[in-house]
Length: 165
Image (cartoon, rainbow, N blue to C red; front, top):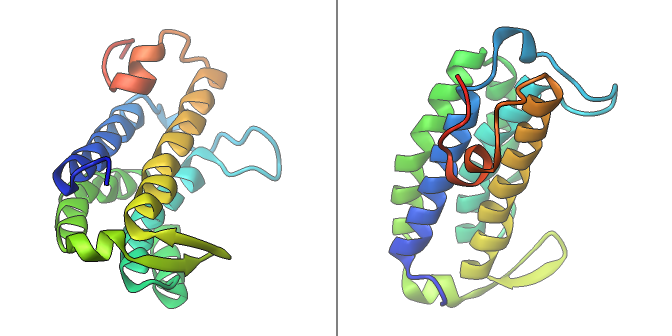
C-alpha cells in the first residue's frame, strides 16, 4: 500500500479536523441554506457526513455494504441538531483510528466487491472515504462562500486554518 495504516488514519483524522474547522464557520442562518430545491441543505450535508465514513469503513472491512447499518445511522442523523452533528463529526477522529486500526495488512490488500466495483480494501478506504471527505468538505466550503463567507480561502478548505471568524 502507498500509505501505511498509520498514515491512512492520520489522513482521515486530518479530514475530520478540516471538516470541523469549516463547521465552525457556519452561522445559524446558514444551517438551512440549500443551493437549489433538489440539493442538500447545509445541515443535511453535514448529517450525511456523520453517516458516510462511519458506515463505509466497516462495510469495506466486511466486504459488503452494510445497508441496515446505513439506514439506522441515517435515521439517527436526521434527528441531530447542528451541535450534535458537530460532536458526532468530532468523534470520527477516534472512530477512524479504532476502525482502520482494526484492519490487518492482509485485509487491506484483500479484494472486495462493492457498488458494482472490484476493489482492494486499502484503495477503497482512500477512494470512497478519504475522497468522499474531500469532495463533501469542498461542497460545504462552496455553501459557506455562497452564504457570504468571502473571507474564507484556500487555507480554510485544504489546511483547515485561517480566514475569518
